[in-house]
Length: 239
Image (cartoon, rainbow, N blue to C red; front, side, top):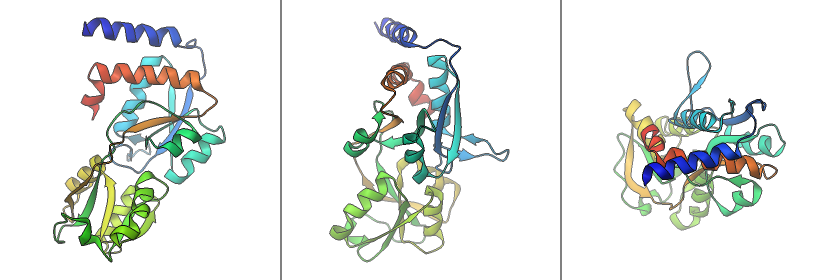
């Protein structure tokens, strides 16, 4: 039954595919958001969402070129028609669903705090009172942190990338950085000067890819490919 389901999904994708002669799709992402996207020594980009985009490209039979840029510039570039899609994993929100099309969820969007390794462990939001929280400018983490600022008594400072937010913690400019779970794990693994908090923010939300409103057919193709990638275990293997 599982094999029949995968075959049916593959057929649905193939029926919806444009001709292979179609021009390559242009995509963009935040190039400094480990482990989703990270710069390599040769100037190219690697990471989880890069691998996922390449897998989508293979499944829909169209080349997808990927360009790295700052997170805050991604949505304006998509809306201006510069790109056909964004490979950055966006947290699905009502506001974003009104601004552009979102695929179905790919991975969970739970959050953790990154702390200096010498800091006391955080188990309660009350411990953040009077502290500075660093996060990435323009993403859902910033929105959540600002919404909770009055309730928890912290101050929010934003940075151009997740790595810069983590660096602010190490340098003492911020008490903690609010990061996605996978990003936090990778940074802490590579850098013994920081550690994870025991406090986890369970958002109940998921990461999706963004497609402009003008391209519902493309969203359908990519979403069908994502369904296949999840169903056959590829998405879990990549993660």
